[in-house]
Image (tube, rainbow, N blue to C red):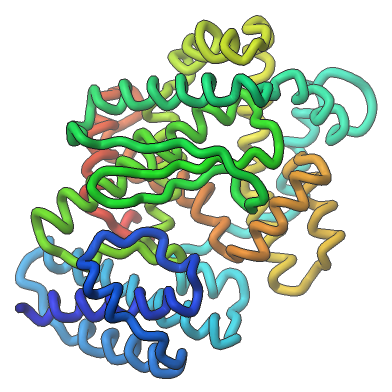
Length: 403
């Protein structure tokens, strides 16, 4: 076995050992069962030293070609993120930007409330009604909530359409499949649990009603061409064909998540360009949900402007986690600048408390993946965009490697 393969196996075993300290750390594992069975809950200081030793070993390796060089660069960043996360578990918390750089190889651009005021003004003119913007938007959005008894039909239709669109451009294994389960009391809105052998479990949180816009968003993000497709391509290409075993484990707080979340978010637009999405929403999803399709145009104009506020969550997370503001002020800022109601803002803050700087992976990840793909494929050639996008999923790179 080559030194790089030996380091890769040691890295996988290290991640599994860290997972015994934090059950949420190992997002997916498709390697040998024996490695998982042999994992021991060693002291964090010992695991920290293992990570440091692996970093020292990989730093002196030479690369025989560009592919091996890219493999080593990505694995080195993954190992470094494990070391940082172990230190986090030991109580050594970094400031927000330093943490995101160490864990995800990226830093969110600086943002102030003043940067968002023009977008709030635009929304103020768009959203019907009188009075405070947040309350008006909440009232307006209620007519776009999917009734609970229609949720499964709407979400399943969105997933099936996303799958059909993805299959036109990505050859998926015949046995690929997923289950959908509806859960509650979670800090996230949906989650893909990859089970290996091309199978996923997608859990949808029903703590709050799902807005109609979220059906396609979550279907694409969690399934096609998002997390489900990303994971099965990694299993097929990296683990089975190349035996690059570092891809047999997916540590949640790592550079892999920047690409996973960013590509899953950008995949929504890849699968559903705006005009095609509107057509499908109006003719299929709105009627299935019992919502008037004539209301779709204004609703999606408002959604597009709201998207310009996506970095507000990063701003609030940074201020809150760095101790600049307290919990109540953070919720108030989310209500004002993300325009979510009080309950959803509180849920969002629970996500921030639990996952910390992970929040940058959704918006900065999406923008970075989009820039990477469109630099190589432009914005108009759908087939070429799919080709570049799929290649990125098959050969993962980190944030700094995408620039």
